[in-house]
Amino acid sequence: MDRSIPPGRVAGTLTPPCSKSYAQRALAASLLCDGVSTLHNLGFCDDTRSALRCIRALGARVRPTGDASLAVEGGLHPVGRRLPVGESGLATRLFTPIASLCTEPVRIEGEGTLLHRPMGMMVPPLRQLGVRVKERGGHLPFEVCGPMHGGEVTVDGSVSSQFVTGLLLALPRAAGDTTLHVRDAVSTPYLDMTLDTAAHFGVEIFQRDYEEFYIPGAQRYCATELHIEGDWSAAAMLLVAGATAGEVTVTNVPMLSKQGDTAVCTALVRAGAAVINDARSVTAVRRPLRAFEFDATHCPDLFPALAALAAAAEGVSILHGTSRLRHKESDRAEAIREEYGRLGIEVDLPDEDVMTIRGGVIRGGRVHSHGDHRMAMSLAVAALRAEGVVTIEDAECVAKSYPEFFEDLESIRIR
Image 1 (spheres, rainbow, N blue to C red):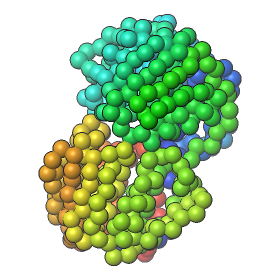
Image 2: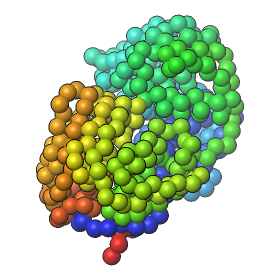
Image 3: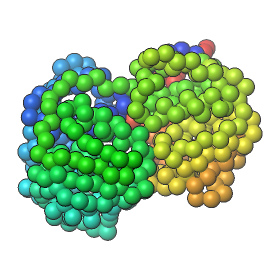
Image 4: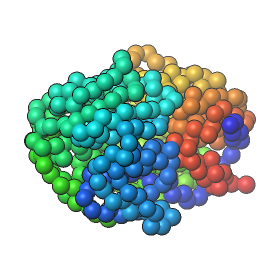
């Protein structure tokens, strides 16, 4: 599906979908409970639906209690031997360790670009923890068969924190205690979200500098009631729209959130935008924008939003952390360079961890999302400042995280 975005100004208030990262963690923890947990403010994007399929496949019973609320009766008893993770990297790395608690073989099956994303980092630690793993060259599908026991194990955290998250949520249910050593942990705010979720469900995990985690075994997850906060990754796109093309207020995004993408507010201020916040909302207002420098190593999902911000700023902005972008839904560094180049914005990758973006006149034109939801949203936001219409190919990929994105953006357009 193509989507054409004309230039224009925006003003209004929007509520982004819930944090899919928190939602998937909460669904996993609910599966591991003995009782019934109630989750509120759920949004049903593709990734959250993948997590729902996973917990049902692993034995949870789920019923709606409202438009955005679910009751989840836990119980880790696989109803088959397939775990369909869809195209969700987090679901894969989160539910593979949980499936490894089971004594029956479970086959982890993915779709689309996920089949090309690296998963081999999971295999040696799982085997050290007693799991039988059948795999092909470090990519899906995998087959795992537990039960996973405790012990001492080292994990490479340099590519993604998601597998560490899966282990942290699964290992409290293992029979023995575990000491988990993590080398070169990245995206540490996501690990904070994992620890926060576990604590909400009554589970204790101890950590030192994100390098060592001690996880007591034989713990019980306690059923709870939880409200899922808004997604700061989605909010970042909306706030950049406000900073570059008018004024946007985003609600249900607490500033004290553990989500790392709250850092977009720092980038906005460095670029010269006005940022106003209270306990549950943030407003970004357009001002003359200047080039800025920002390290997104621990919040790589911000890169597409930051690209739209830098394209509208005067001068050359410098973004650090591009090595984190190679194994996302697309090679996001190359995708940003290629697609913004089509719009007349010069993007360079002078080394493997740096991106420079020379802001200036954004041309209209035809661009491609690369099947990447965040690229589609980024290009749509950039289009607000373009000289002509920007047409985005394969725009329906926004359903992965924010199905209503285009409708929301159109609803605040000034006519």
